[in-house]
Image (cartoon, rainbow, N blue to C red):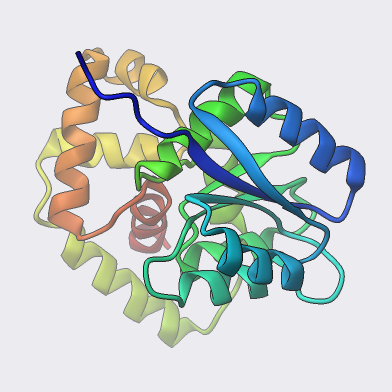
Length: 225
């Protein structure tokens, strides 16, 4: 018989009390997850995380005082940091992009259905990224604003060199990821199985030296600029 595992410890940080209450109800509804603390701002989240040692911090992007990005940077700069799962309504794409660069593992919209929020918490607790097609597309849009011709040329050449190691099928998979497609949609577009899509995606992570789909998509966009 398998040993019973302790529940994943979750800290919820949002400046809206009703949102915190709703998230606590969602998280505590799962027998393998438990909310150990709630914070109303980023500074309180950092303090409580140091005391409670959560496995995952559900962190709102916009909060008074220390915002979600600042809190994420502090949390992720610590030894053995928790997994950080950002909450957003997508009125703050630049902050979301900054959190990704700081090392946050995932992003969920506040109106995400409860089962998907639970799955996202479990995935982040396991150390894997959670990046939905909607999130991917918006983060890419925030990252691909206008910049200098020289910088664009340099980024394009660097991206093309990195992508040159891919097979044709891996390139097609990367292109579909950049279009914001989920695995079943990629499978339909390329007329392959979802398992094959997952295999191609794993190869992309290994060959490109990235750890999530957004970074694959950004490389594709840079190569095409």
